[in-house]
Image 1 (cartoon, helix red, strand yellow):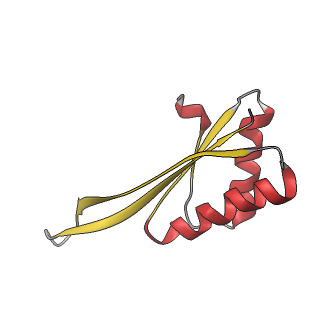
Image 2: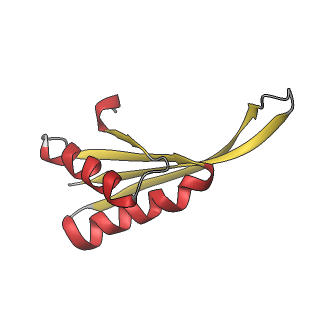
Image 3: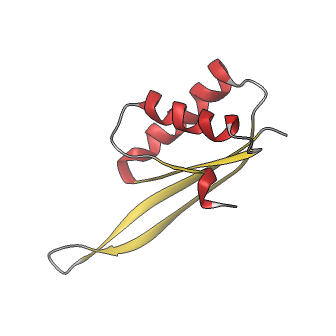
Length: 91
């Protein structure tokens, strides 16, 4: 999947990410990926659901991948952080 089809979720309001994801589909792509880590995971789920229920009801959740990765903190210790990838498809 091209990096152009990926929407990274951060701390902005959900509607910003909804608009970004809809733009991916409006530019001719049949798939989009919503990616988030840590506390932004719930925002990613909200984004996908708002798109599917309000704006593009024909979209399907093609796949959901979840996992945990180990990252190094500034104090030298390691920490686990969860991540999610939500694959949306217009087909």
